[in-house]
Image (tube, rainbow, N blue to C red; front, side, top):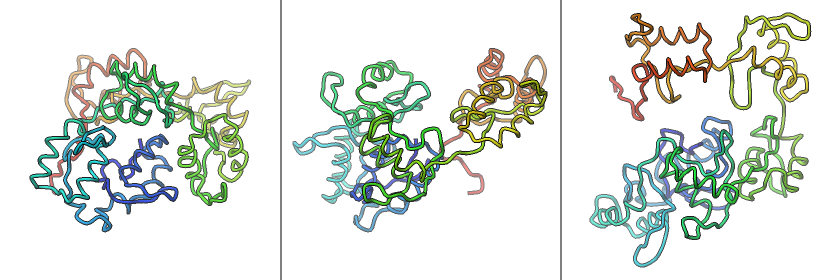
Length: 381
């Protein structure tokens, strides 16, 4: 999921910023934007990071004196800003408590801050799960979150609060995660209106909607999300009709792209198709003259994809892991390295999901694969 400050950036939660003409704390803005389900690295994410970096990530705001040494309730772990606490007899969220402490001049390295940490860290702080539970994830499809009041564990709450709790506290495979998804997805999750659907969105193209000038990406991600406009609704159809020509375009057909996944092309694989013998590479070049959503592209991909495209077997179970290429090990009774095993997988054209792929990965991944540290040690730093 997209982070305003990037994977290694520091978010200054109390800094003020403006979104759709409304003032938010940067911490609140991250919660508003989370319902848009924008992926890290996407064009929408990059534009979002560019827009809000100066306000939210470049340092404490000059509009909030002493924000740089504010009291941190959760100095080294995750912060559940929407957890409920009682402060001086008044119920509030941890985010509201954070602002109250700042406004009252409770700063770091003070007795008041130390007491606040003791009183509220159990409710406000958590150790982030490795694979967070997403309330609105169903298989590979991720949906947006509704601003809806529901009953959860016998108490009345809203979908955003449940989404936040699951994301910050539970692993994807936890039984509680799966049970909550099954119970609440119909009430809390929806398919957000997409202007272009299977076509490409022109992120920076400006359009006028309801008298307001905005980029197509802002209309798609912000306006649709804040107004909870559902795919298939009359309002969605009107917006698509009004802005499709300005916001949407097609790209050349790519034989080995399926959904959001890219597969490898077997360039030299011979393929007889409609009486014409060519290699998969030649068929792929011919298809580039068609557009991705054309009938010709879809028909040829449907016929050739399974024979011309494959997803190679990955040596490591997790994409976040790195390979120790030169590590010596024994493989098939021979002295090898992790690089040798990797090249063997490639030469055999083993595909992800094959039994042999899974067997080899089970045998060598613990030796060859390691997770990169979040803050890597630099010898010369």
